[in-house]
Length: 223
Image (cartoon, rainbow, N blue to C red; front, side, top):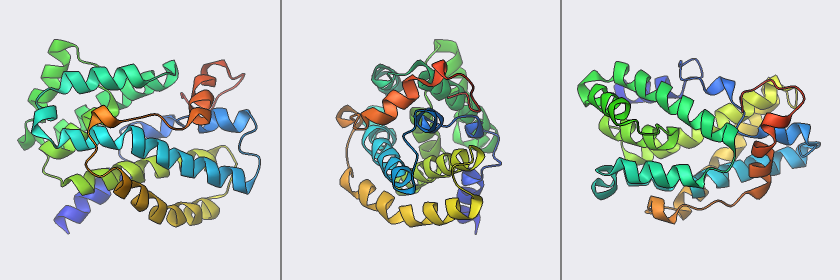
């Protein structure tokens, strides 16, 4: 129960990491009319999973590889260069800072207080994906646990955003999220062993939706 309880705790939407404030492009896609049907929403969510797997999971994997994890600044700079939407960059930095502070408090024995000091002292960009991988590794979680938790958070936050925007109801959101777990598992298998240098962007429509967020007439989310 101890390990399972810790994973469930980190996956809880009540955890004060701030993810509830961001839609990761879903709000922009909705207001652009890209989610005007049940099929469109399904395709969007599948694309969101695939985008996360191909562009984010290689960074999580590299955080478990000592040759990369010992040089976090290189990963952070590479990740920063891959971001195209200013709102997403801001969200990544806010979430990364929040997550690092939270994990340092929850796992003081893992050396994360010192890692947090290092980020602050050297003014490293605390991008969420890299911070997530580094902290989960330091806290003793297995790589597969970290990857599954990362994708669960993506799905959880996207479905939560869809509910709050009125695109689907809570029950429909729960059903859709559960149905997407097998797809997420298949996608994870496709990128097994990829380093961050192999990360790639593959969902241009989502990036367009993310890019227009700052120009929406009214917004519920920060990104």
